Image (cartoon, rainbow, N blue to C red; front, side, top):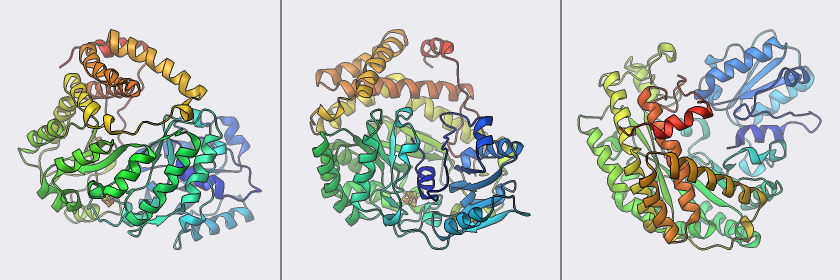
Length: 501
Ligand code: SF4
């Protein structure tokens, strides 16, 4: 996804400043880029801390003044002593003071200077993110922000401390303006993800915004599909769900975290149990929404039964994609404070998979994570869950005209994707029988997109679980420990043909 926060900052900088925007997820900044700049602005999340330090080193080597903002430094400024300027918090009065200071002089300060936002800029005053500075065709999914903040207080989450508990909002017109801007680029992605911490943090505002989105889709021939993240009590909001269906929301990420109700209570996420969990998931499916679930292992409430309960949950929920993570304590969370008091925080440089001293042994928890990932992404089971979605979820989506999607990028992608899926998954892989069983069911219902989508996603997930088994993958997506390696294309054949364990 294009990085929303950086696109926003790029748009907010004074018009007289020339901005060169580089997303190092796509391409590295070159020596020429560093030489061109007076200042290097950097941003990232905790998991990107090693890259943030690396960029700082390269920029310093080029003799540049460096500024750091974003989620990681806002949560833990002490991690970044090498930066000249720190921007802490969201865009707001701190940003204005930083810009004034740099407008005066770009000479390095004698000591590190910090600018902290006390008064946030209201979202309705946000400028249009600088989508014009990125090539959207380089991204699989587009990103869009409608709100910031979440009213809940889950123990492990830093959103309430960083972004507040009173969700702040953009206007519907801002949203449609941003969509118009994305559409200007012929190669824009066909899926746009609402990056809001909780899409129904303010239900009234969501209900009022959605009709504008539906109207925009109708006027443009439904060029986009949407995804978002929300709490499971979305299942109680039938009006919002019906509007989401009409707007072409196809996927919702839900931080289910654990199927164990006592564990949800302990982490203060009891709102996920507001309705029986399976019933809530089936309700979301009935509005055409495929659920992606976040799961956490290593909780204090884990017992010897946790693994079997999670496996049972995977089977009963029929959720195809689950991000199964080990608990990680983030700064500025109640969890961090509690574990610190108990002396249970571990330094990041220990090479362990998490910074939490679990109540059970570390090796036992990591081994359980490996077994659960292997279980979830066993090809037979994974494709059976996709096959279930064909009738339970995909069949409930509205039929939309193809006019809006007839772009050169979409046609090119469909051909390339179709060829690769048939070759790598449908012919060469040792899970091709399971794939064709699920794909046939989708194709019989005319769901060509779904058949290709399940092939693509399953290929990635099966590969991920095989890398996890080899110890080449992180057990926590939030850990700064880096395992994940880019594998050469030549090794793909070995991967798809690796025996199923
Ligand atoms: S509901 Fe989600 S965003 Fe809100 S506090 Fe809990 S984990 Fe964080």
